[in-house]
Length: 109
Image (cartoon, rainbow, N blue to C red; front, side, top):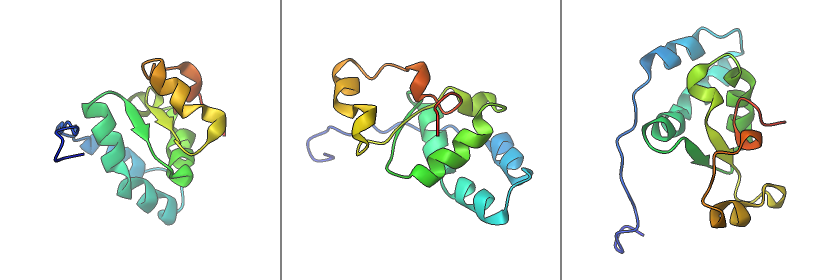
């Protein structure tokens, strides 16, 4: 993809305040470590198009749990491309809209 110039590199949006809020959550240390490990996905989405495409359901659930109370997280779309019920191909063919049911702050577990 890189060789064909199909990769668009955008700077991640650093979110030190969000990182601090995650560190202060009343969650297990393991949950907080997992979220902080995947903050690059969140910061990349915030710096680009608010979309994350990832197989990592654990991270999705962790961020989804805290998204409702966190402005930065609740408007991020998280799509698992291997979950057929999410209809990833149809979603892409329709322009990858920021549909409410795909948002971290709204998506059912």
